[in-house]
Length: 401
Ligand code: CTP
Image 1 (tube, rainbow, N blue to C red):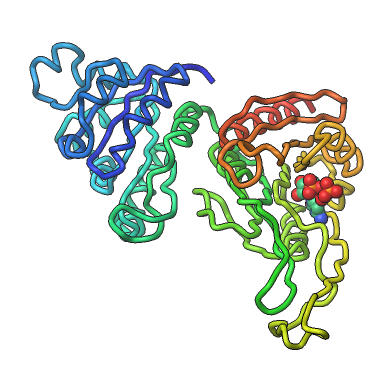
Image 2: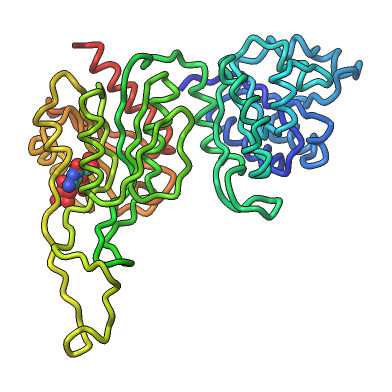
């Protein structure tokens, strides 16, 4: 992705302490970064640290003659290819929605013609408040993009949605934002996460898939303007913005949900880790140890689940269908066999034996394996980066038809 001139606007929330790391992540990708702080942000992060990591003078005061002399606020607004607001507090989002310009940051945000990306961070109740959601709706209507927030433990002691996204995720979104919405009018169906096959009333057989890859794909499709349906298996991830989510648990439920959405979809991406087998018998009650003969072992008999990818590929029509291949050895050979067996347009193969990529981590190193025999090896990338590469290929494939 091309280097950009990024103005990082920092508002006053606890997540501002991550700003220097964000600057470093952006600079590692060769972007030029200048920082502008609200007066409240200075309570959480030092302008001197930001100056040191950005290598640029930090702007704070709209009326400081020295600062304005070097680059005035309109010059700063015009300089940026992208304005990134991280963290974006509820207060700053409200000011942006209302068009207020009472300090340097809000003035630059009103004056700039560059695309704007915000990374909100706040208490869960402030985030879900109708006022904040209404402000976000106004901003989105104006073309402002939003990354995060994530769910988890919040600095205020609450648990829930409100954590600023990880700097590496924001950096990928920043590099990609402003890209034209190339998938407007396209329906994309994505499956993500693992399935859980019930054994009894409380137990199931499942796998370690986190759903992160599939969720990143759904997010990327929505960002490019597609209408997105995400069939989500077992995962704790929040629904990406603009995505319709259908929750399922077992492979049979996933199959039913995929078939129900299939006719309307033009692109189908099966990133889910579907369990290949399910217990033949499911006890409606909890199996008790004392009920087992001899009190020792329990034997589960498993039956194969239907192969959803194979089934939909058999009636592909003019859809583009992408499968994933999770392999622990002989990755390429296994992926090629899987591609011809399943009959899809592309297999995204990953080596799940690597500890730094694939299952349950934020990055992935994948191979794109094409029916022509062509193989592309991508470097280790954050999962949103893999998703962007995937859609670049899918769009090219569909253009060539
Ligand atoms: N898949 C599916 N239905 C299944 C099993 C897998 O739709 N019952 C899809 C997955 O979503 C993925 C692709 O098929 O896109 C490959 O899944 P993977 O688990 O790697 O392969 P399997 O087909 O299960 O084969 P194996 O376990 O033998 O490697």
